[in-house]
Image (cartoon, rainbow, N blue to C red; front, side, top):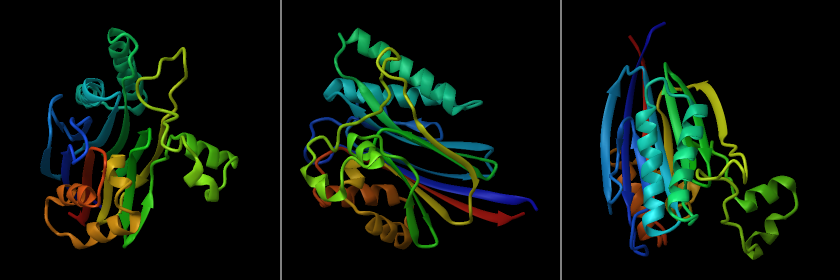
Length: 260
């Protein structure tokens, strides 16, 4: 059986109401934002493409350093888009950001990254940090990414209870990101797949400026009901309306699968 795949994607990134700069970036099959930007987005439709890449980056380090790190991660992805491999990407992007850190007198510089990679009807996801990837399938939403935070690590070890979460002071501290020197720690991205995509699967990739301001059930409701091509922009604007105190970025990906 030969299948036709149509992929519809939208992306949007906004500074929001509480930050002076936008340190986020995204990657939509070759499109990404310039290093200096405030708000920006794009929409694409692809038919029977061999392989496609989508990602969201949340820069760390404040002002110049954060946006430089997220831009570098996106630019690196563009440079490696042919014959893409997760191992090569994470190693190369991490090394480039570490070099930036050395040039900036060891000031904090880094970025999270979440990736959705679709090739020949199979999807593989990967992430490092606390940006998120959700799959919405048949009105059910599930998180595919794995949070790399001190809180998530302690919950996994069972050293903190869910009742103690609100009292935990370092729950947003990252345990992994791009920009970690090998002498300090070996980066360990979460990678899952490949798995076959199903007709009408939707993936939402977002920074924590979105996921901390819209709960999963609301995201599912928006994605299933909103029919416009600018769904990522709608989700980002909703997060800002809900009081997001961070930059907000989202990439929506819908896969339509039909018989040839």
